[in-house]
Length: 362
Image 1 (tube, one colour):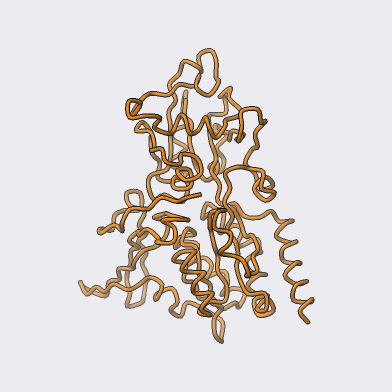
Image 2 (spheres, rainbow, N blue to C red):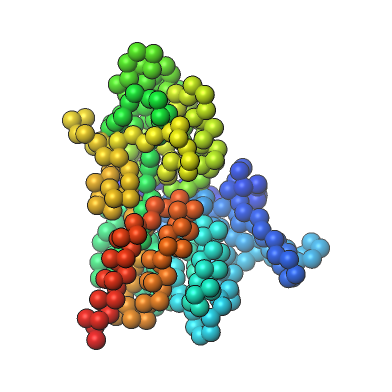
């Protein structure tokens, strides 16, 4: 799997819907606000890629005095509530600032001291290799599995691409080739050519209807970059594709007599008008629907694991972190970060496996 390069960092901070920036405010402190300037992750340009990855912090004091800091420096700042040296966690920038802030809050409530610097999987692995991190949260394409040789690796959750259609749609399955055909540019002459539901096997009135193709805005998570790499390959994205900024925005494409085919990280909560298609690698296959189970067993074709990477000999020191990472509270945080967490049963198995690993090392 080869990954295409991302755009350069934005120079101007815009509103969350327009540029994916976040603006927050503290009350009663010197720092009164900051904004994140989205910036492509050099590791993700070939493996993650997302403006949900954080860029630089722009901080403001009082009236007009501003300073720019590397965001990693701020997140390693003392945002921990327990005494002693914090556990240093590096890795994927796809989880986003809300996840990081919520992690600090949740960890503080259980007396766990953390320092998170999530600015990319490859930089995170390098920090781990150099001994400047205790654990890394990593998202890598399957073709780079050799980077993890020699490390202890455990799954934490999955990024996925759902192919979503109206619940009334007669189509139940789509192949990777179908998705490539309707979303990709087939030739220079075909740029902007309309696609129809008959191209996906629908008959009757549905077959004659024009496909409304929908995909995330550039930088709104990993979905679009992952789709380009895993499905489109060298093809460009078809010009007639509507864009959405978040899952709430996505729901608007399924109102009324919708004829949408949308790519996204999951179905919006409570969206009864939307269903996910089964995805097949070949036409003769029955296809597999996206679920926690099919992502965990590897049968769903468009799933990418978020993995916990560490040194086996450090497992004892990291027991508290693993208990935290496999907790229900972190599973909820991952869901809000558009990552599908492990099922409760598998989380329990993973936690017991870590405990057994420590017991064997005695």
